Image 1 (cartoon, rainbow, N blue to C red):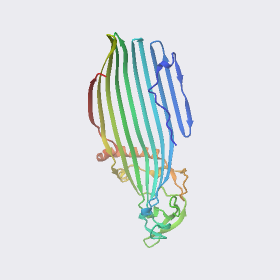
Image 2: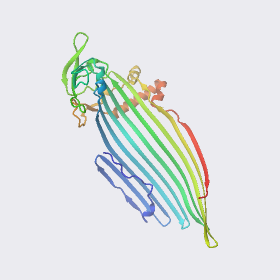
Image 3: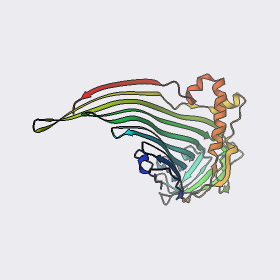
Length: 385
């Protein structure tokens, strides 16, 4: 289970220490890495504080999904690393009791690094199949079942950067407060998924299945061999899925980006006086808001990246990144599979796509979002609370 550490630095103040102070707690707890540091200094009229923190946690999703309506037995494996980072700085200056100034800045971001190894056994496309019943079978034998693979090294990022300059003043008969704030936010999604499909029946598995327990079917894999007459039959039993026998490689790249910027300026003034035997108070305020939002939209086009790489003399070799490390799993699927080095494969994919963008201008929009369109809104308000 993933837990977020408290990283709210907005209440930090240099006034808590009259002299220099430093702290740097760290820790590793239940697959989490936590780092934090804080420096502060305070004097008679000037104080400053800087704080940093980071939390990183690994989250593994081990999942089986069955689609009995099509007699399919897909398998899914998903690995996530989540990270939250934050940094803040604040300066306060009080040259006298009547005047106080402050400048603060806060940046925080939430990151999801998603590594996906997903394989679907597409039983409805088997070369041949026999089942122990025509409706709701509990067992069967299938020959030449194509597998589809989903490999992904993706990122979700949400960040906020906010800065505030302000002052509080006690003037003759008046209290005056003012604040100027600039904030920008960004939401960015980059999920390049490489879809691999088996095209050679001799690379496809055959399997028998037992789903007497519908919540956890068991599968026994076999090789697929030629019957010598243009057809295919089941070969020898195997314990591990073939993760390198794919003939088609396509890129499905999900891209989403949204940024916002806002500027808020406000001031409040208050005057108190005695009117006869009654206390009187006058409050005035004015605020200006400006908000801008920009987004180049989203993209989810399909690119035949394997075919294009081969046509342009480029190397795209996902087989080189299939490791010998078995999946960590609590499921008894009946067969094993190993991790794919998604990070290494993503580096190779980026290199291939950079070269293809130079050669195939038409696919630029698939891998790179274009210049954002911007909308703007302004608001001016004056009030007397």
